[in-house]
Image (tube, rainbow, N blue to C red; front, side, top):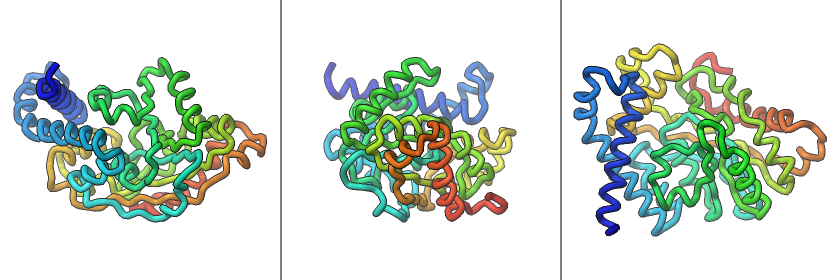
Length: 298
């Protein structure tokens, strides 16, 4: 297939997926009477987002993941402000564990981590699978849990070979510490895979990270978000608005890296994978307390 035709097909697929995701975030059923009208209204910004992501994927092929992320990040945020970057080793086995408020959080991390061997453990979403060059840097987990062992083994091999791995152990979108309650509680639900990686690849340095300010407070204050009742659904609604409307992308993302924890020391403690995960989450919680702008969060 000619490259131009393939690009056209991928762009159309990305646009369709983005529209599906937006309608789901808005709580609109695909068979709703007005879903067709809403899709037509949202098509232009959805197609623009698809075109930009397609260009991002080409940038990954030409210049690498970090350069591509630095190119894309200003389009969806006011940049990134980083603290603790000195804790991110430039070589050797490295596991970065981070909360996941969504939107530009991953871009902020990719733009900041200077590791050409970085791989990201991520959910196998159709949108990501359409990005051929970016997918080469991902280790994908199926949403239904199938093939999970393969993904974990692949991640472990990468760490054991001295590579860098970024993971979001919450496994789902978490509250943005700068805007929503519940960010600290979300850390207690982190996957025990963090402890498993420490035990199975003990030479790994584990660096906790916290992203905040990824979700625009203005988008969260939009009255339309109140159409969704659950706070998590309101956050998804706000993220969709932020993707579709440039006015919600002006604030910088805040990213903090903590001091590294030795996988070997954690493994030697003889504690379980769950206990190791709690130790790492506690280190992340310290960062979160400095990042949280939500009154009453602890």
